[in-house]
Length: 425
Image (cartoon, rainbow, N blue to C red; front, side, top):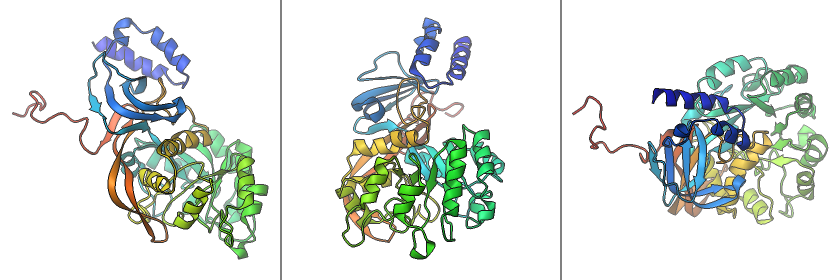
């Protein structure tokens, strides 16, 4: 038994790639007895939505050694060490939040405390550290977190803890060098909160991204005194693959013509040329009139994200299930919302299909969601609410094969089961 467990541990270490073919080759080399070992975790009878694999129906999900090993209509054998019955619930890939804050300013939140209860297994810190303090961020956040934490490094050397309006601390070469030194941890460049005039901050962030071959994510203001406007920014400054966050806000991005209330023609043009638009809900960047009208005109966000921080977690309550619920109220279907919360953010940061899917051989990152019915108040960033008859909530999260959040104790043993307590009678 010990030898078999050691062999499975060795196999898991070998599975560093994301190719299903590689998994098949590795399994072919494992003794038959090991292949027939019980699943560590079986998620049974849930409605699986896995857009990457075109699955939208009731399936069982078998997990072993931290990876998805089988997704099938019914898994009857071998038995599992632990079974979670998910009938009536949605089983989806672990959600991917493209815009979060975990370091560098007073609103930062430790990722495990907020992401894992929301079914979010991958978060991307949006500009907390810069190249000057990345090592400190790595020690304090990345090495401690259970959630997968990736990074948009700030174009300012000291990140959000520095002066984001100081061009003197915006060094594209040093920023690019940090990205190239940590390619597994840093996925792009963040530029934000620049209080000066002109395009210098945007230009230096995009130049750092160009030097490193990574996207830039922007949220610079478009106030009249700034000398910046949305049309020039999305058509002339941003590259295909660059991202504009705070999408349904009219301070960083003029999505709607304020006179006609129609989506600006240049927004359609920017999307056609490959510029991406991220929700970035937060405490000040989701307005019902903008979201409702843009959605009605067929202009949804490419990626759903929260911009969650201490100023929004108790006000707009914008975790991932909440943001999805709001977009569903504005007309988005659940399958599409899951797609924009898993596949598209993973692709945007170059991590698909490593994440964003329940494909066999991938890391077992899973969210189990419940659609509640009733009357619910969903809040925007201007203190306005809309009433909804349904909302999505997370009830269980699996990260790398381990149950890390279980609201209702679905994976718990009954306390009165014989032998359930060790040393307690």
